[in-house]
Length: 292
Image 1 (spheres, rainbow, N blue to C red):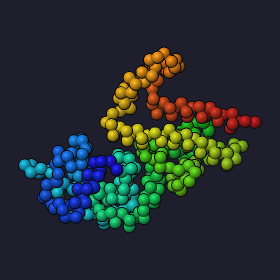
Image 2: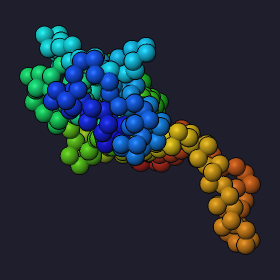
Image 3: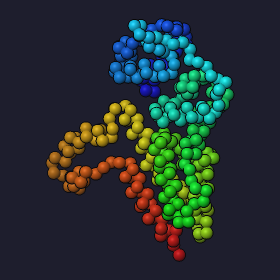
Image 4: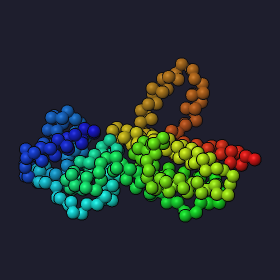
């Protein structure tokens, strides 16, 4: 759990236990840095989260005080709202920060209220996967050209993974989650080869191959997003900090191929990797699909 979330949860516990009552001042950002041993930026982030979750308010001349219990809206709760809140949290903060308690806090309801609609974390994760994959909108009928069809579905999946960086690591290849929308995509790809000589197992192998490639590249999205949140640096800024060390390794004149690569300014960009890999995969399928 991120340090700022630990602070938020500790303050929440004190409020729920009655140690901090409505109107009581909560620890200032400076006090948080001293008590929890964190940076001022982390303390400020914790204060912002407490306000966003309706636990505190800022009063001029007084400071940040307890606002009182979060408003309860259990009667408005639905499974779709729970799933949407969970996806929003995972998108912004990563799956590691997702918990039933965190979702309940964002919705302003009790944690137990969630379990009337979602039995547990496993069922919630499946619903999140299905909702995210459901955003992939395919035409009712695949294009007549198989390469055009596979390229289309792969690009749409890639965009979906980019919108939801947590999605790729959450999916299982050998124990696939039975998400209706994922099955819908597979059915669409199987239909791409209608009229061809490919058997159903061959078609499924192609679907697994293509999806595994897209998911494999996308598996780097969440770690990158987490690194950006933790360091406050973009990938380009981080690479700049590594350049002196990298050049030191090349200073002795060895590794001529690496030296040539550096001179050509190779770009570590996931979109570039995706485009290159997709084209090569489709090229490789041509002789297999068109074999006599």
